[in-house]
Image 1 (cartoon, rainbow, N blue to C red):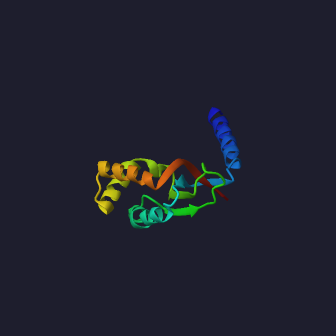
Image 2 (cartoon, rainbow, N blue to C red):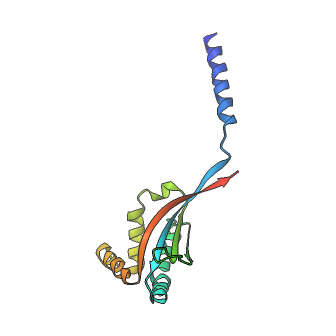
Image 3 (cartoon, rainbow, N blue to C red):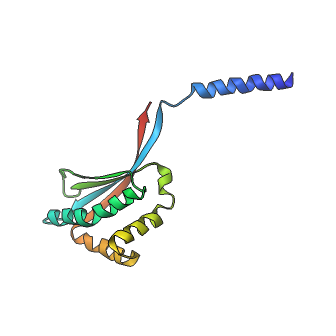
Length: 143
């Protein structure tokens, strides 16, 4: 009798859980970085993106670290707003586990730069642009 009662309760709970299925699934995750390009530096920054940034992201994509990437320009409404957004998309939140070490290894294979040299190059790009911040967003895929 006790076993039968337990089975009935289990079936009731299971049917409630199935009835509460979410109308969405969690999709890819993107990091959106807001960039303010300094006056007169747009072409220089685009040249950097084409010659250095893109090859590293292509290699990360080939290595399965990145799903997609894109650059978007925008019309800043005031001097403190970004001129560009850099968007890098990852398969899911789990893709961030150990990502720094994996991405650094891929970048080094493309650029030949160790961490110290890469950090110096990052600082030097400050002459062309300022990073205003980054935001992590997740796509919600409706069923």
